[in-house]
Figure: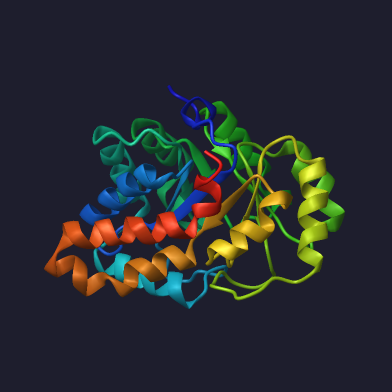
Length: 268
C-alpha cells in the first residue's frame, strides 16, 4: 500500500485544497480533484458532507447541503477517492470528516474502505486530541496518516500535539468557523512561528486563506496553506456555468486557482 509520504510531491511549500465530495456533482468532484493536482496541489482534502458541521462557515455548509442532495455519504466519498485514483490522481488524499459518520459506518468497515480506495489520511475536526488516541492507533495499524489540528488556544497542549503530529500540522489561523477573511490578527504570526519551531512535520495554515496576498504575507511563517472556503466559493459561483460549458468553466477555475496560489508556484 502506497503511503502519504510516498505520494507527497516534493514541493517547497504545500498547497492543500479542500473540496466537498459530491459538490457540485460526484462526477465534477473527480474532475476538480484532477484539475487541482494539475494546478499545483500537493495534497487533497476531500470533505464528507455532514448535516451538523460545527467547524464550517456558511460557504462550506452550503456545499455540504448540495452534496447531501446528491445522497453523498462517507462510503460514496471514499469510493469517489478510488475513482480519482483510477483516473490518475497521484497526490495524497486526506479524508476530512466529522466523527459521527465514522462511528456510524463502524471502524472496521471504515478502514477497509479507506484501504480499498487508497485514502492516505484522516482529519476529524470535532475529535479533541485527548480523545483521539484509539483512532490514531487504528490509523497507524492501517498505514493511514492522522492529521492533527492546532489552534492559538492550544497553548497547554501544543507540545503534545506537535510531538505526535503526522503528515502535516493544520494550524487554525483564527478562532470560530471556517470562512473567507480579509485580515489576520497580529498574534497569528507568533503562534505560527512557535508551532513551526516545535513541529517535526510541515505546518499548514488554514481557515480564511482567500487571497494571494494572504499567502505572500504568511509564507515565511509556515510550510503550506489549506484553502477551503475560498475555493468552494469559486466553485459555487460557477455552478450554472458548469451546466452550460463544463470544459471552459474548469479552465477558468484553474486560472483563478493558479492566481490565488501564485506566490507558491513562483518558487517551484
